[in-house]
Image (cartoon, rainbow, N blue to C red; front, side, top):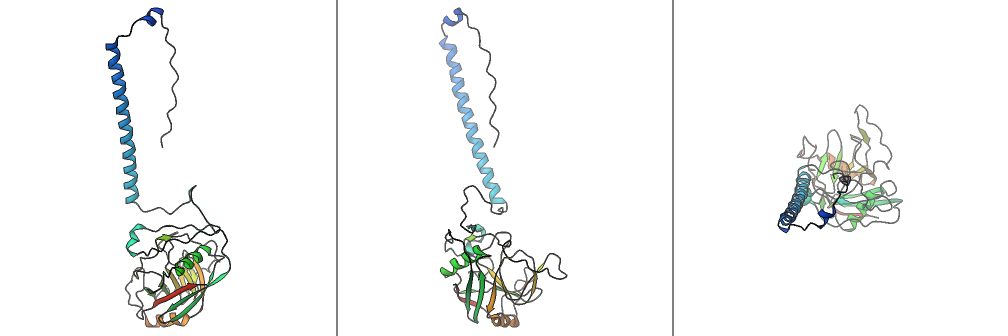
Length: 283
């Protein structure tokens, strides 16, 4: 916004002689002056309106043709007791999203351990999740589970080389889907993972780790992956749980292999042994 123009110094008062003061006004001379003032004011108003419209149009085009910036706090942002905030997911993913609303804000801190039970067509996987270290993640998964968001969804990606994981939680089964909202990473709350040997910048996600999948900073939704063998992975995926039972389900998927549909990028493919989540609950 341009700075407000500074007021100019007032002109010195003109000295008016009595003769000038009593001189009658020539109406024919005064009329064009008033008309010019009115026309000038109208032109100025039109210029200002056009300037505003041009500015709005430029901002709109810029917003539409550039990548969306990472979300940031504003004076009107409302956070709950754990600092959780939910904002709209990328509109480009709308065809793959499933709208069930957003989690309600909580005035109480989320603490303690929970159990996320993933029942599949191949068996049940029980995951211990930490509501103290990852309260927003647990709140989101609890909410989505209560809305049956995960019921009937496939685990769409299995990776069997380099890293070893099974990825689930996309209602569209394409790897592009999720809810209509996203939320922030919670990496600062979790325990640091050990540095992977011989892999600069990578850390080891141990067997049994359950972590959020994302497409960049603060783009977490419903997708998650389970590591079935220690894997060197960039430290940008929030680990929020550990498998307590049911690892044999993942081991069977790994033995069956994948179809390499996602090779070479991001790697892996659809499990050759199709795996579907029948229900997912958090208690």
